[in-house]
Length: 240
Image 1 (cartoon, rainbow, N blue to C red):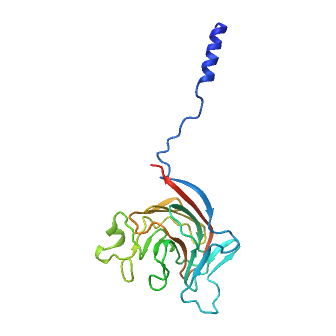
Image 2: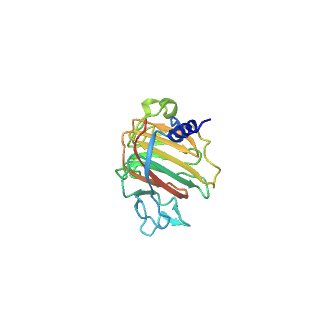
Image 3: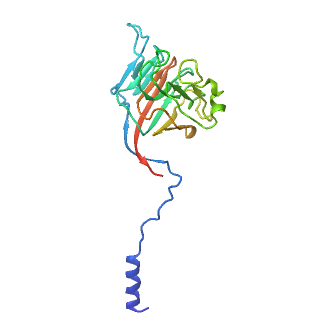
């Protein structure tokens, strides 16, 4: 091979595009996240306030910090509510029932306090009740899912106030870990849609929600629950 030929091959090699091949992102999440922040600093309840409707004057606090976990002691019953409102986000929650199985929930799009039974703020509840994690409960807000009659009951009973069929069952009741172990719940809110994963399983997906922003609330509903992570990632835009 002549020197001129070798030089020509070398120039072609240097000019060639050797950048990595583009990855197919068709199976990636439908949103582009940015600006992650923790809603709980591991030290105190800065950024939150509580609403305990029937709290006696001499009652202990319902929500405390213990061993760097945010703890709902379950009673007196009520809610711990973020000071700020949020929209378009992915909320990463890690929680467990350290003792007996019980009930709790993450309420999104919270607004008017004590709107239901003079206790619950207007919201959509993402259920954490043991073995029912991922149910939706409509609390003076509404949402639509596929197979509504199968998962909510007869349409004539549907409603968002006292005495109405407000529970929308999740897609699987077997996604939780054994009692005492940590569970991961991801709640993704984009516009009028809400998706919920429990330990990696998609357990609910609703649309046409009647609210698209609001505060985030944690419940005290009789059982002790520990939270070790409450990370929120804002969502800037849709990617498809």
